[in-house]
Image 1 (tube, rainbow, N blue to C red):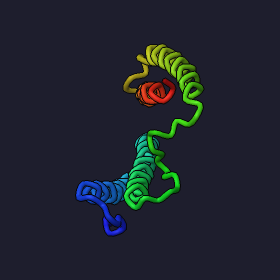
Image 2 (image 1 turned 30 degrees about the horizontal axis):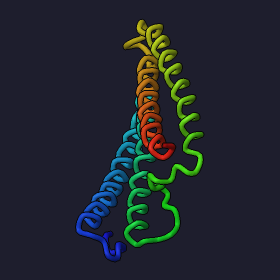
Image 3 (image 1 turned 180 degrees about the vertical axis):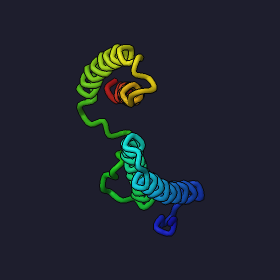
Length: 160
């Protein structure tokens, strides 16, 4: 795979190989999950594996996009890679910061609501998927907050 990287350093070639081989293993894992769901008579298992499949599809796409971005950078292509370079906050870094602050407030409110909902669902533990689903949404909200804090830290450097 690194053959597409004209002039790549050893590190860049190794990273590209790692990204593309991981993408390949993600593809295999995705197929295993799909086969497991299709072969199961459990509706609950199929539903939960379906959620995992959605994540695995995104992981597969992100690994491919990272490999393509690396290839674009190494080959000095002028087009913007799918995974943008971090220096691309644009001329409105202050607006990005303002929007990020608003979105963080919304995510924190969502986290509080999900926590309250989780408390209400405690009695369903062991009899329903709902407590797990709310917990997974809480984890997603934590991830969203982490992404927004990353934006906040890095866009602030551009806004100064």
